Amino acid sequence: MPGTPWSRRMGLSVPIVNAPMGGVAGGRLAAAVSAAGGLGMIGMGSTGSAAALEYELTQLDPAPTVFGIGMVGWVLERDPALLEAALAARPALVSVGFTEEWAWVDRVHAAGAAAVTQVYDADHARRAAAAGVDVLVARGSEGGGHGETRLGTLAVLDAVLDAVTVPVLAAGGIATARGLAAVLAAGAAGAWLGTCLSACPEALTPEPARAALVRARATDTVVTRVFDLGQRLPWPDRYPARVLANETTRHWAEREAALSGDGAARDEVAAAAATGDPRRAPVDAGEGVGALTRSLPASEVIAALCDGADRLLGRWTGGTATTADSGATR
Ligand SMILES: Cc1cc2nc3c(=O)[nH]c(=O)nc-3n(C[C@H](O)[C@H](O)[C@H](O)COP(=O)(O)O)c2cc1C
Image (cartoon, rainbow, N blue to C red; front, top):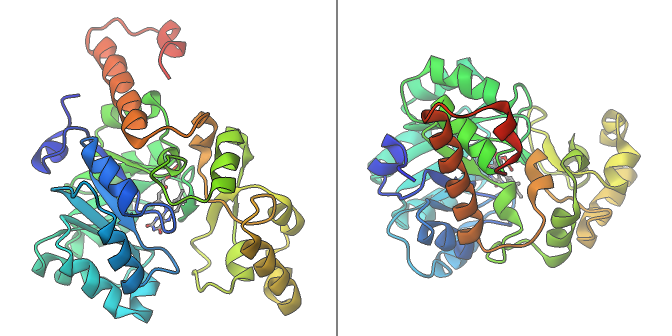
């Protein structure tokens, strides 16, 4: 795949970045994505810490020349040592999301890394670019895990590409060659992939969750705050999570306000989450989850996406694409 100007500048052979998924994207997944020619990211989520990051850094094997680290803004406010540990590891890319407090950007630049954040509309993109963020992730509501659900992926990508001049990665529901081809054709500098890499053997995903991801259909996800309320995680209301729908999400559907005021019920949800059983516990997943039918190594997932996207884009350039082609390449 020829790549994009941004991916070539970063020294990547494919315009793919794995999303820094807390509890899923550890050092092994990041190393595998980088070895496959993309940019591997280690994710520190809501329970991230400097110690957890230091352990995951030891799992970066083979050691990538280019890798990144992603963190959650409100976690850094609670645990500043996490940003210190991340910068000390000399990543090429540092992502901080779920905050509009921008002091981290200068720190990232001083460490010689590029600053990245996820944005959800054009105004947000302008604010991030004005704060010096080097690369934006236009993240659509189809995406797995936490995020605002304001616009779908192509709509937010369009809006952000119009609003800023910095490179823009696309995220949310990209799990097939068609999705990758669509965002690259639209002008994305690359794709930021979460769900479609979350069932890889290199991911930290526990086995029951991996099996649930492989079983799930595209229509099996739901956007909810139920697990964050239950676990008393201080996620701001504007960032709900897209997860696999299960007994717990169904039980509390449309009743989040009631849950929020009921301490005993919150304890029950926390206990359900602690079981790790996907029938009751959270499994973050975006609408691309229906494309996961097996647990394949990251290199195979990335090769299939990039080879397929290459074929689709090549057909278009050749002027031979017709609607009849649409079933040919996933
Ligand atoms: C299992 C999982 C965990 C995630 N954890 C984080 C995280 O810790 N930090 C973060 O910035 N984004 C996180 N995300 C969101 C991703 O950055 C990204 O927005 C999303 O995965 C893109 O959509 P997709 O899952 O459909 O590919 C997570 C997503 C998933 C699926």
